[in-house]
Every structure is written in C-alpha cells, then in structure tokens.
Length: 299
Image (cartoon, rainbow, N blue to C red; front, side, top):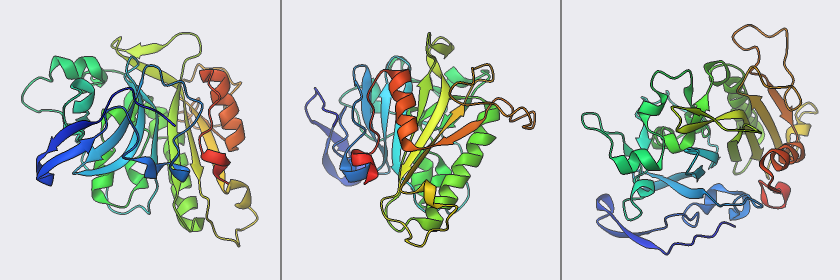
C-alpha cells in the first residue's frame, strides 16, 4: 500500500461548512476504488503523487500522478452503468499539487486570467495541448459512469495523457465501450477498473517539452462477483481481463501486433486483448516494477 511522507493537512472546504481532514499524497480517502481497498502493489512510488480525485465534495476516483512527466501512471475507479450525454469539456486542475495546503477539490482552469506559475510547474495545463497533435486522453472515461458529477470529474488533466486521435476515437474507444457493455451485462457486484499508460522504453517523448507522451495505453478490470451462468464465449473474460493499445503507429509489434487490414484511420492504433497475468508481465518488463494490479489477483 502507498504510504505518504507528509502528515494530514486540514483543508477548508466551504461547501461543507467547516474543516475537512485531507491527505496530500495518500490514497486513504479513496481506497474504495481499489479491489479489497488495496492499491496496486509493487510500484516504486518515487516521483509519484497519489491523488484522491475530489469534485463537488465527493471523492470520485483515484490517480497515481508522475510529477516530472505531468501525466498519471494510472487512474482507478469503479464502473457504474452509463447514463446521459457526455458532459461539456470543462477541464480542471489539482490545487493541492501546486500548493500543498490548498484544497483537495479539483478546480476548473480560469477563463479570463492566466494560470498561476505554481500550477504550471506542478502539472499539465491546457496550453500544453494547444496546437499539439495529441488529444487529452482520459484514463478514467466519462462514459464509464452513471452519475453526472462522476462524469464531469473525469475532465481533469491529472486523469489525461497525450493520446493520438486515431487511438482515442478509434480502437481505444471501441475497447472502452466493449468493457462497459460486458461488465454491465454480467457483473453482479462492484466493477473495479484500472487504466494507465506506458512510457517509451528508451527515452521519454514530450509535448511542449513538458508532458510525456505514452507509447501504449493499458486497462484491466476486476469483477469478483458475476453471473454464474456466463455464456461460453464470455467465460474467459471473468473475473479479470486486460488490454494494451498502441499510441504510436511507428512502434514495433512485440507487444501489440498491427492489423494491416484495418481501416486507414485505425491502422497502427490496434488494441490487444490479454489476460491480467500477461499485462502484469508487460508492465513488469517495461516499468521495471513487479506490479500487482488487484490484490490476490481478484480472487
């Protein structure tokens, strides 16, 4: 479990009418988004900041944020049956990354005034993505949530990585829809999802020399309670399954092969479905960490 070197901080949240105990750099307030309340194990947390993503006075999901790369390694959440339209893209930032004693509540980027230098130095900002060739790729997608406020909360740059449009609106979007449909149809209890990114193997690539671009996206889920009468074709996907998607058409095919017959807009952004064990082996090799995403392998 991740441990914080910082003590608890008292944060003023006016909507609650008083002082609220908040943890900067600690998952203690959002353990419910992890299976058995245990965050992924085996991760060397040096350089990372755990964030309990708070919006409208509630914790909505959790992210492990890399301060130098200005992107999350992963976001963890519980999937709920989708409802409603995609919210307006009002992107937000984390005050607590800029000022350790600031609010744990995410805030919209200001419209008519510049972002403070502390915010710019501590995390990605909208200008980083402006006129780049990358989209703001959600790790925790708004389409995986029922409550409108949960969907709104996913629009924070601490939940986004630079993602090619061909991936974001193509094979990766298809994967997100398939995972949602499968879990909604067959899960009978909590649906735990962790989605993340894999940096380049040799040297980081950047937008604006500030935000690291991932070579791959990955996602895994844990559905410990599911329909006992699963169709034969669906049984391999429970209680866990995973996937890795390409974010670079020029990457090799040792992790995710390319489909030469895919339509042009999707070509090179393929997604490979795999077991949880295979994903963890890939993460171990690429990140040099013996990562276990779900405690006890979701058993």
